[in-house]
Amino acid sequence: MTKVDKSIVEKSFELAKIRYAAMGVDVDKALAALSEIPISMHCWQGDDVTGFETAASGASGGILSTGNYPGKARNIEELRADLEKAFSLIPGKKRLNLHAIYADFSDGFVDRDKLEVKHFQSWIDWAKKNNIGLDFNPTFFSHPMAASGLTLSSPDENVRKFWIDHAIACRKIAAEMGKQLGTPCVMNTWVPDGFKDNPIDRFAARKRLMESLDQIYSLEIDEKYLKDAVESKLFGIGVESCTVGSNEFYMGYAVSRNKLICLDSGHFHPTEVISDKISSCLLFCKEILLHVSRPVRWDSDHVVIYDDELQNIANEIVRNEATEKVHIGLDFFDGTINRLAAWAVGTRNTQKALCKALLEPIDYLREIENQDKKSERLALTEELKGMPFNAVWDYYCLSNNVPVNFDYFAEIEEYEKAVLSKRN
Image (cartoon, rainbow, N blue to C red; front, side, top):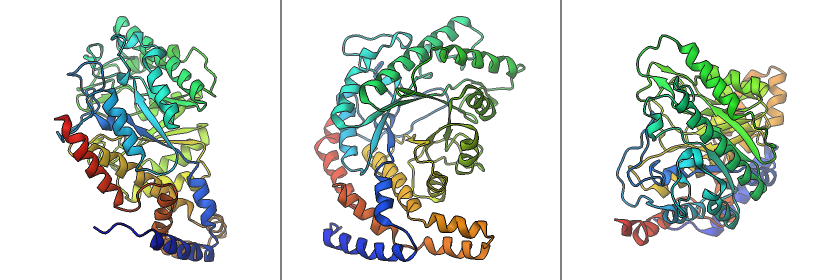
């Protein structure tokens, strides 16, 4: 395939600017806004949610990464090299979302309730070097203390204490990440707790979860370092009949405790979409965390593609002027394809959707909606679908010194040949 011609990209961009200007859209202003929206790319795509605790560890707790594509990262050095390569293919601001199982155990292994900042200091130093922020997640799955299917909601006090201590340790680590990097770390708490068959006492389990969370958050930490989020789920493998941390539970908890609510694209009924939930959540939650994923019949965490729901998510963020209130993180893990390609495709698509959302004449659309001009609103939004936003996106990539259009895939193939293929 022929490499994209720089001069054609620039000419197409200039023509696109003229087209958008005729609709009252300042393209330069839109791109300036896009450059300020960070995307938090998740580390766990790089090794199929394995982590560094043991060579045999892997996902559990109702989540599953499938596939055996060659070249998976096997250690912290390989994962960081892959991340850096992926970052080089993606324009704009980026962050990295870490799970606790990706601790640096070079000075010796400790269990999760004993994790300290020192086990993530090398990640903090790496983030400084790469000029990115860090986000964080306690890991409540893939551990013997989670074998029963219950962690923070367990009736076993010893189990609950282990996981409470783990979460408290993670909050301290996350706060230090935010402090050292000068940008707040968003720490998201999701637990896989639930029941395979119908429980008798859902109330007691949810009360235990509430009390555990209250204990975890009892330590006050300045929000300029740490932002706490909680995440619900509909169901998972092995917990099909009842998820303790349901949407209603966490919505109530987030609002009553002044926490961020995390909306995951795959954590709802197949007919539900998170784009419709954003505006409601913004009314009652000070901020929102998104886990942008792609469910296929269930929470299967497929790579994000440029589909209607992705565009609707971006539209809701931009139309509600919530780019600083909505934190965008990605959450997918596909081991059937090149993992760098998964990162690049998913992240670039998310940015592309934001780019298009920023190119709407939003003030005018609001004006005609308020005047009840339904016909004009319909006609205009339909015409916007055919506007040359991709020419603007291509120029954004070019101006950020990353590959334009499909050119990035050639770099992925080169990296696979030079680096990934040698891991087998």
